[in-house]
Length: 506
Ligand code: GLY
Ligand code: MN
Ligand code: MN
Image (tube, rainbow, N blue to C red):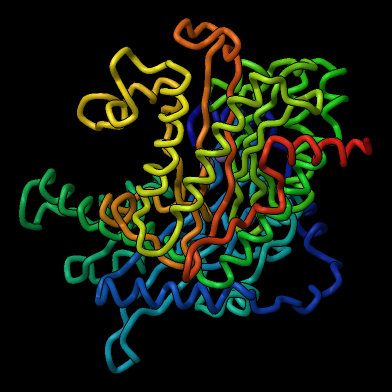
């Protein structure tokens, strides 16, 4: 505790007498027998752990959930576990702050492989100060936490009190390789780094630190790549996330006239989508981009402070995250009036054509990067047709990776990324595993070309200025192509108009 925190704690401390302690501890009905069921995610998490165990035979692996983060003074952000922890335990939502999953190597006599041990802070007794006084973890403040038995039943692994973690983590250190997911919990990383380096070991402190970082990075990269091909349970979660997102988009469409009338329409749209995200799932998977008019040309417009005007398009890039933390990532660009203008439609139809080309390239045998190549070619063709590329530069000229790339002025981002527990999933996979890898059944990725003409872009035709369009869908790679998981959400310009009209009852 810093002296500042100490001072605040003292400022607000209430007297706690022994008499009160005794009084608050007594006369509670026995705790109800736990009703915890095994989690449907548990067998899948066990399979994932088995893959990790095989890849890191004999090593101790430490995968922290992370801790609560202060938002301001004594209030924290809602907790979200580290994605690797969620993937390997099956825990999602806001569970479990400060927990650590350890995969402890087992000798052959005891079956080999690893034992999965989840260290966490279990429910404290009613005779503890935590029960009534701990605003972060106490039952009076945040509700009852699971017991050791609850978590063992739910997840099908060994659970222990977090207080036992520190000793377990450094047991036999020097004789065993301990690998850690470093970015989950800064304090724990510092402690474990100190425990893993020693004066007596070979090499300088810097050498030891770099060896540790290498061992840790190999684990992090493996865990990120492990999420690339989704199992059947994960695919089902993705379907649910997409269906929930569809509900959110339709609620926004229903409220577009309200958003125009109210002022600060972007915030209204953000709120309406957020309401449904929270109602349908755990919440939004990432900050919603609610970008009206020229704001749509700012790729990560999440301020959402603008008005929505009658003649504007609104680019809504939003996704619902389920309790499992799997999230959708979908964009529709919608005319606030219900009808595209000629210029808006011209751009929209170009982006649609690019998306169709990208979707057609999603099939096993093609490389991940082929999807972008297919979509960006169509973007380049339109820019060429519109006369926007420099004099003498044709489609091949702009697509040239060494000398060209002029089209990127109007679509600077990639067309696709993997999608799952992280909106940009599998981000630590190598180029060979990601960009240059062949698509395989079970992968889930986005296809999301766009065109963005800024209001002050003097190279853009005047009629295009201040218009940004992106269309983004979430697709599952199948044996012979792909399934567009978000196909139920209309995409062509005329289908979008009919969608809006249908929701407005016109
Ligand atoms: N919503 C961020 C993205 O589309 O990648
Ligand atoms: Mn998106
Ligand atoms: Mn995306």
